Length: 375
Ligand SMILES: Cc1cc2nc3c(=O)[nH]c(=O)nc-3n(C[C@H](O)[C@H](O)[C@H](O)COP(=O)(O)OP(=O)(O)OC[C@H]3O[C@@H](n4cnc5c(N)ncnc54)[C@H](O)[C@@H]3O)c2cc1C
Image 1 (cartoon, rainbow, N blue to C red):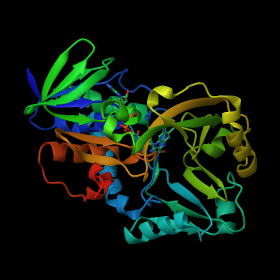
Image 2 (tube, helix red, strand yellow; image 1 turned 60 degrees about the vertical axis):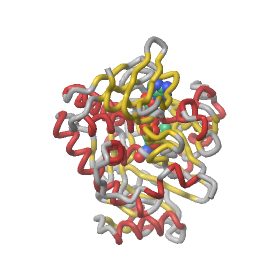
Image 3 (cartoon, rainbow, N blue to C red; image 1 turned 120 degrees about the vertical axis):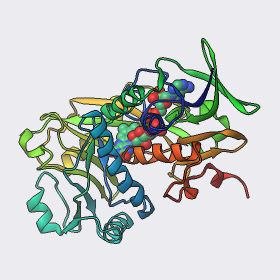
Image 4 (tube, rainbow, N blue to C red; image 1 turned 90 degrees about the horizontal axis):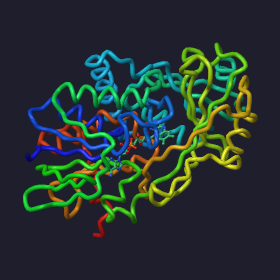
């Protein structure tokens, strides 16, 4: 049998693309090396920040607005609660580019927001110890997603709509074969008309040509016990990202009425994903402990849980979305550089549009892998 579309990697992006494609009149087969919703790569760790006033650049805002609608659509189709909009803070010095970008994108795209000066911020969110020269921007359209549940929801919905899923099935090779593509697993070979490669941190393994422009990085998340869990519920303690001098960190409220998650924004380069050591060594969490002591009120500074995850980072920290050079029937979605989860359903829809030659509403040229080709 020849399938219309093969999807390699059913993590964040592959699951969303599969859901979007399954609504169309095409046959789809997907491959995942682990179980659906596993937490060994980019979709683990209980929650993901959803922000619309975007410090990474205002060009992402239309994608994020579309994603918000699509997250709601997936919730409606599955009955699962995936996105909680309890607000989001960006904390920092108003003269920093990050703060300027956030305020600019909130104003430009009419995102409901509030700017809190030092005194207001201190009063309203006493869980954060802020400096006199810092402010907070409250994005009222922000919140958090449940990543593992989102992946499972999208894949299960796609299966209901007719997609075929092979979990615990690593793909060992993929190549163009005349007008078709051959996908090789340990046991079997599959033939498809087109393939979507969404292998996240493992992107270089199937497409070695990307090695100079993308690599896997390890990211550690830590969970801390609060003095009083009530102070860290979503309505009291919105998700946040903060840049204070040399420190960059982020986190969110307790999602299970107990532990509070904080991550430090410095990822550890691995080259290939296979190089990861999932054990978190004590020296890798020193900075997190110091950050809790220095910047928070009401959290015990020793983490009660630490875990290591991975994402693929490109050299310009923007993703790879589009056709793969010299591989006519293949497209890639990858290299989301630590900030892709929130936009996953819109990326899944764009992948569907490219594969089925449908019109899409976003200018994604800036994300094309071709941008790295020598002129
Ligand atoms: C700790 C952490 C915190 C983050 N926080 C945020 C946040 O708050 N907000 C936000 O928007 N983004 C955040 N991100 C980024 C976001 O989670 C990622 O950008 C996004 O999940 C990447 O999705 P992906 O599909 O590329 O990779 P993945 O979700 O890892 O999916 C790739 C899948 O491919 C599978 N695979 C790989 N190779 C093969 C193969 N050969 N055969 C079969 N299957 C294969 C893998 O097992 C995996 O399931 C965070 C990332 C991390 C790691």
